[in-house]
Amino acid sequence: MSHHDERTFVMVKPDGVQRGLIGEIVSRFEDRGLKLVGGKFVQLDEELAKDHYGEHEDKPFFDGLVEFITSGPVFAMVWEGADATRQVRAMVGETDPAESAPGTIRGDFGLDLGHNVIHASDHEDEGANEREIDLFFDDEELVDYDLDTAAWVYE
Ligand code: DGI
Image (cartoon, rainbow, N blue to C red; front, side, top):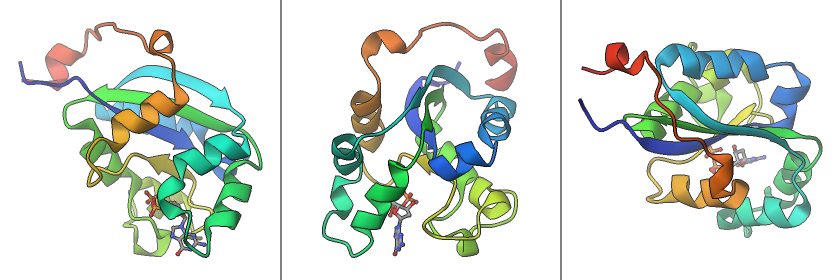
């Protein structure tokens, strides 16, 4: 069996929560064959928001980004599977919904760069997935278990 225990961090942003897209987004990852190993509702405070988006602190959009991401609850998740970070990013689409293909989450549900529905760890940023998982989840909040379907999802 191939190696399929990579974990990646995903969150439905406040706009996605308010628009009732949590279930739709969870379904897409389930349908793909990924395994949900952790999930919770989080109201980010300013400190967590600034930690999470620290790489953007010098950008002109930073204050607006922090304000938006703290404006309501997010639904934070950890998904596990083969090459999970890259696979999830491909399903999310580009940062700008206008550049995102239909069929991707941002391409199907977003129109605006600032309100792009979902966050997922960047596969081009080595270790971003583990960093973000650590920022949002304690070890005991992540569950190790087998999915019976794995034998059919993976060769
Ligand atoms: O990993 P992504 O979310 O695809 O993109 P990122 O890490 O480069 O940027 C984080 C978020 O910041 C992004 O989802 C939306 C927002 N953002 C990025 N670039 C811009 C931006 N917001 C505005 N208003 N303008 C930008 O140029």
